[in-house]
Amino acid sequence: MPSKINEWIVREYADLLKKGEGVLVLGCEGLTVAEASALRREISGTGAELCVTRKTLANVAIKQAGIPIDLSQVPGTCALLIGNPEATIAAAKAVEKLWEKAKQRKVVYRAAYFDGSAMSGAEAARIHAMPDKNTLRAMMCGAIIGPARKLAAVLNEIPASQARVLQARADKEQPAA
Image (cartoon, rainbow, N blue to C red):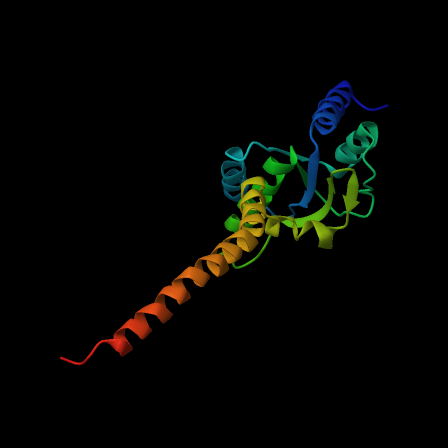
């Protein structure tokens, strides 16, 4: 029979998972206390929540939350990054920032769940490259404004070229002094 503490932990994780729209499952084998603290520090400002736990507790919580991720094949300790999609993407960027200079990578992506879709570890590893909401807005504005800017340049060129032709004609007709 599982202990009451484990039941409470699982219930807490399941509640977090039900509230969060984005979930990243990270494998964190061999993570030292200093590295775990640095990871928590990097993630703390993103709005996502990091829960380092045993795989069995995480698996039960994920099943209770109704998320179609199976952690039975994931080895060792895992961490759950939970938050809204923006916060989770920002947290993934923070994880990458932390490990980009490290000699040995100790945090790996195992799975993810975003927008109603479960992702494998390989797909989850590309989440950090996703643009955030503000970047997407800027890209959409650029796509909308680009053709209008080109049209304005073309329409502006008609009177400008006409003025250049008239100036050239006027310069040609004036007698040299």
